[in-house]
Length: 299
Image (cartoon, rainbow, N blue to C red; front, side):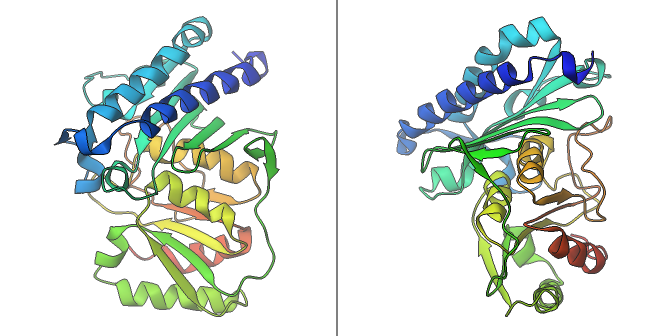
């Protein structure tokens, strides 16, 4: 089936409704009552933490997408259900498209009462190209969505990545950056990148999940989010990046692996992204500096 045969706007509308309904569940949930547990997959406490809210949110999203998925032969990959299946050839590899869902990215900031969490839904083709990206931030009721080739929107208004000069390079990162043995060297590299781009220096921002880290790149004229490659499983998973790769790209920003190539969002052997790392940037100039200078670092 060609992409042109898909009712792409209807599918985007369905994903948007699913994200909004899941987000409203999150908004009205009393986080103090949630029972927390840790799943076996993931390389950090933040990636392993799960609550019944994650599971209920995914169920809402699956329900909204079920009928259209059956009609258009679309697989479903959700963070909270994918690890319980044992398939030699996952459904996402057999079908022409799959939904890639993170029902609550940033569970840790959510349970801690901080901003930095979101609902993320993408439609990805078998080659790993994201065709639709939908992100809903329940903390401030912000909806961002994009369709490949049709631009990106925040609360229905067109958004673009701004390329004007900024006083500093905003760098969004997670705890793995602070804990890295080469932290000081990496920070020096980022400062050099900032100065080469005509900026005064670097402002580091920590605490959000991968989805919000990527989206926040679009809020600044000079910003980036870097996730370094590593040998062990981890580094985020396809559901952490599929929707935002579509959104940031359609908004005029940059999304790639650490060497500047397309993100592998449907690799056969794993859903993890540790093998190649991730770079998001508000413009290509910043991205190219990062590709040239950060590729030698690993976690």
